[in-house]
Image (cartoon, rainbow, N blue to C red; front, side, top):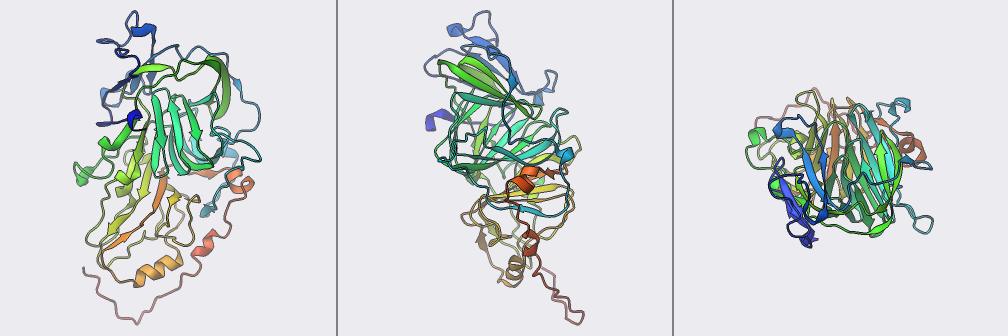
Length: 445
């Protein structure tokens, strides 16, 4: 994939690419000339309102063999879908929730591709009102065949956990491996090829688009650097075939047939493009004195809400890092939060629950529901020798955090049979250590 990806130089900048087989396919000096080079059609894909400020205006121009409007009528997809946005009918609970590893379907039983393998775990809001989020898993064992998907409701942030994905988009190809993420924005058509059993997590936002968080006092450097994000190089196929375009529209799936591949874009330019990021490139900022910094210092991408200081969604990671603190309980502290926190584990052992949280599992701690390290983690961290330690070796845990109050779906709580009804027991062994006669240890660092 080395020749099929290029590095970005910063979010909000203009990018361009053309397939090497058609040099000069990008028009010079204007977006939509009377006749495009090579007899192509010009088509604009808008990710923001036309009148949005220049700093937040997102759009790309595509130069393609046929415009995307050439297809039959959309009709509802037959059969049950694993997507569920009817949260008003779901049963709410403030309890801590955890799911065991979701099963990937056996290919001997049935071939399941990325679209058919989507399952909604939880969410909130209304995709028709363009406000809210949804969290899904994908569980598949087969590649999509002459089938493409686009999401009219929002952006997908895809986190592979098992198996690599080769994602063909209108802008080109992206290979996304575990420990990497890929963002496919609203409206972009894509196809997923897998190479065996595949599982992963998806954060979907309706409010806007992901961007890099502000650095504030951190300064100019740190966290995710813009130059480490990659976007595809233009690639096209001129193939006459029966192709199905699946539209996720207002939470439902529709399909339209067309007689050519949708991946016929010869050249493109703009700032509304799919991209991927290797989580190993995240530059961790951490304490070198005392106390435990808030998890906001681990934010890779954010989608701001309309309320200043809060996010419709944050994508946060907990990668390998040096932990250097004095007089400090180093794991995450016990807390209650005005945000919902959905945790997942790509690989390794999460330091707050090393024995009770495994790769492929997930948990949801709802707004103001208390949570924190399990009993084993607390006892170990409270009595360990405090010295520089490289923690989370071989681990990549992540969190989807949102200001919305999430509701779990019926599939997640019942049908999947993966809800861990004993999750709360990981805190039951926490003992009372209070002794009013004990002499306080100095807390002065």
